[in-house]
Length: 113
Length: 115
Image (cartoon, rainbow over all chains, first blue to last red; front, side):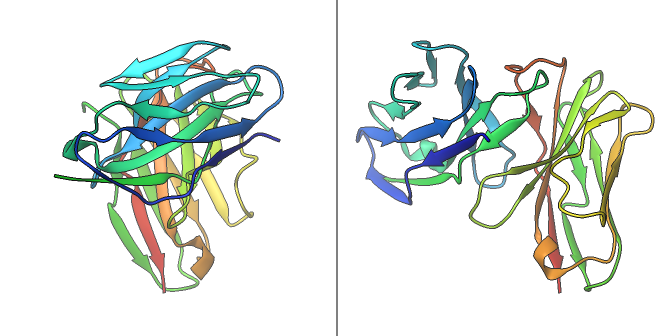
């Protein structure tokens, strides 16, 4: 079956530091890959996505590249801000036509001024 | 409304009670999902509706869990004879169309605590 593994957190950084959150997956076929973010007190929001190998998703300074050879979709940001403090979830959609998502366990990011 | 709305926001139940959780998806959205999120974990799929049809209920953990969407809009997740292991946040999500890479819009969830 499908599975997603994220690096364990929590991750604590100073403002303007470089961020990497690792994500690897197991799936049959060609899944679509997503990063969702959950800000305190809010619902999950789509941050970025990639639908095929070598695609790069990007949004709000965050980037992730779909690497089929390493089955990875690592999230990166060059300079984090305090407002980026949230929980980040890697997810995949595969095996169905209707977008059933399999999520990783989430990574808590805290950015200090 | 502008987003997916879930109610109640918090629910406390005594073990053995029945509960009903409501989801109002974005108007016109065809697809509706329910997920269960245990503390410190990622959401796990429970069930999927396309309009009023429940096409996938493979994630429902037991026959105590039941979901419906009778008119293809509002959905209700019902849990009978609640147990402590049912304590979790229950998330509803909807999307405009049925497509594997379509963006899902999530509600803020209902936090269920079973005492």
